[in-house]
Image (tube, rainbow, N blue to C red; front, side):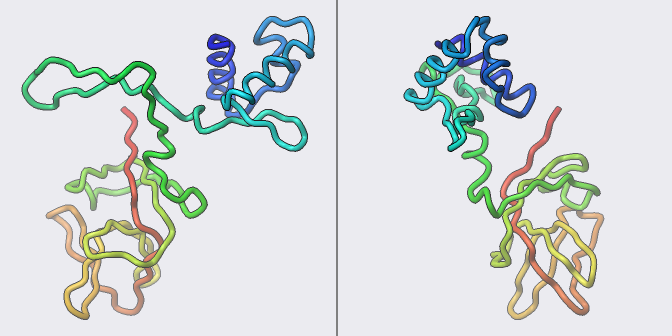
Length: 188
């Protein structure tokens, strides 16, 4: 079943949808839908996939997991430390705390480069206006949108860039926090 599970996951990752029974017959080289049905039932029982009310298969959290191999030294080279076999990490669980309140934005501009956020990166933001001093926020300030550090000094609130060449933004009329940045994604 492990090979069939991998084929199913690869199909899902490639197409961003689950296959139908006819597609599974072809994928697994089966001659009948009944054979597909039996494998699907075993996968559902094992928690590999789910079924909705209409009998359509649906992915579980395991579809977003990646094998965790171990640690790598970012300083002086040392012996590699490997994780236990089959240990995995779910990227969704690692990066997204509240799925319903979260969204992704692509970064434009250089104002957060000293925070390690570059143009072209993506950030995962979680809706909410309760920012703490030092949070990176998505904010509407005087009618325009930006991403900056939220700063509070006494009664004064402002937005601070992470780029020494840029000045803090002090709202003249309105500052509304829309979301707090939770993660940065960069693809090389």
